[in-house]
Image 1 (cartoon, rainbow, N blue to C red):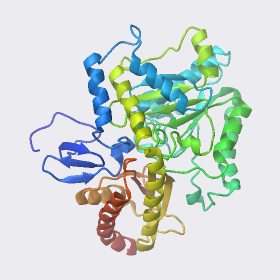
Image 2 (image 1 turned 90 degrees about the horizontal axis):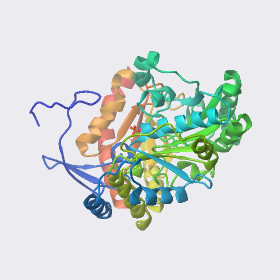
Image 3 (image 1 turned 120 degrees about the horizontal axis):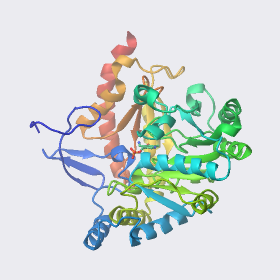
Image 4 (image 1 turned 180 degrees about the vertical axis):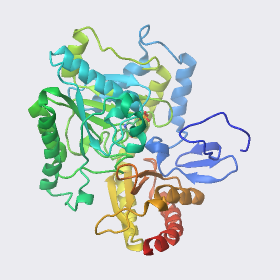
Length: 447
Ligand code: PMP
């Protein structure tokens, strides 16, 4: 499309115009077909154009598309809240709907703070998070984010919060399945709480299975449990940001379900609305919500919260996941795709790590596997390889992996309906893109 556009997002670079999307495939207006190998931004978990979801939305649209939450309860929001409460750990019975991930994280921070104030602990306000991390783009969620290109320009405008390193065992030469590794990284949380003063620390937030910022980081053995125990020891609330890892993509409804660890507060979005509607939720334990409600209510809310159309879509998404045994498929296809990605390490010396759970998978490129030194920055691998894959018709998602300024990782996260044949298709396209990338990278590495 060459006509002038009045739209802008992060940059003014233009993309082909989307014509149609079905299942794991998308077509542009010129008829070129793409595999949605990253489910957008790890959103379209059940694939595109699900008849069940479209039908549920159509039925809801014919009844009502909006009922303001202070005027009406709506059936879809009640039903979805009930379903979500069943899918989350015991005692997490209250669901607060929002329209996206940043709003879910903001809501999590704010209920944590209001709870502390309500129970007479107003000295607690700091929320510790990890480096690198991404928790959203609004100023509150951004203060918890650790990714310099996104945060630095805005620092004077926000209360920058304390950070601890994410448990990137593969970078530190530590074994993922050694409990000492989990204990090592969890000890950093305890040290940070003590350094800040436990009476000032409100919460710790992290992603159970890392998303865009760490590239599908899987926590080391014992880490999840140790973090829970440390939070308990110091009266610090544990917030799980499951915006990306929640919704079933890892093979369980919540990423943390793999370790059986229950937080105090959960933020979910992305795969929850699965691209059919802007939808997210903050779910908190009754012991947090009840005192806040008793003391006069949660002082927070967004106009579109609990929108019946979005909730009807969310409900149908969950039904579709169950009906299609999609979590089971995500686990099975995820294992297959992960082993196929792992096999690429033999062919390409510049693939340094392959990681993830279910269909939340990533690989990282390095110059040297021994030291995990990143590729030369000037290669711009994170955008080059994505572009080459795009030319092949495969969409993948990348980020600078270290502090946001160097290192390159790539998320390969197709929808949870992907089958073994489609894994083959993905691998053919990815291998072509990597072959073309290798032609660029090898001379650069010899220099
Ligand atoms: N938290 C995490 C872990 C995320 O991945 C994202 C989105 N990438 C967000 C929060 C923010 O979500 P949204 O873009 O919907 O505001």
